[in-house]
Length: 449
Image (cartoon, rainbow, N blue to C red):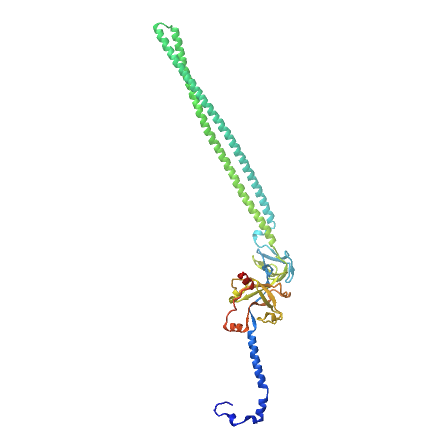
């Protein structure tokens, strides 16, 4: 009953005299309940003081460590028409095995002898190139011969100039000698004339002196003509040098022009030969692209094209191949708030879809069915799902992952952080705080050193 009044019922009535009250007081239920309650409170307090391992959980799927080991799609490099399939879905293929054969659909490549015809054109152009090269060499030899001939002609002309100069000097000296003789003849004639007028010389001597004077005058005219002729020869020799220089300059210019034309034709033909070689190589490679081959050993997952006679474009996916050998890994995604707590090389616990597990994320040692992993890569750019991608490989120091795992299977991960009391973790969860900032022990030791 409620104690609403100040009157105490126990003072007026003795309840212990009733048997029912006595039996109720003698029962042990209340004492046991009190003990259980006190034990529960003590156990709860001890439970709250237990250590709890903070962790970062993520979800993802099974993939491979190396990109070349992941499922890939084989594309066609050229457009064509499907003619024959050589594989079936689920079939094992080796690297280089033919998957599909396609035929040509472009009119530029319909000729079955396209490679041989292009090679014939290339050989003809190579012969033409050789002819131009020989022509250029012949013209180079001709230019050398013209150069030598010009040198000899100029030397001959210079010798002729020297001869003309010497002849001019000789005729000049002869002219001076004749002039001297003329003066002597004039002087002797005047002296003989004076002596004749005085009667001291005979007329015969005077006539003789007159003949000598006339002969000297005739000689001087002849010698002047020779001197002028020698000058003309000198001028002609100098003109001849200019003529030779102009003539051979014209010859050299023409020969060099022909040589440069031959070289230009040679280089143009060489460019055409290189272009034809490129075309031959491209045609040969294109012929090999008609057979679509497996890039590596693996299994044909799915044929993305079907039928015979279907036309496909460049870059069209043909089949999907799963490599035969691969090293599995887990691709997990974590929230952006947890990214600063993730470090390369940290240990991670993983459990896979389809494998029985009992997981206590805060007590990893008490979990069952989880496998060890190690972070090998952290993507620094956010994914389309708003989370960051983390690549996890097998931990070599832990038990191996199941061999039955297939690429694309689901996986759950939790990265282990620092140890805190359970009450602190509950308080953190209720307030929505992130885990405590955590750095690996190795980094802490390096920083201390």
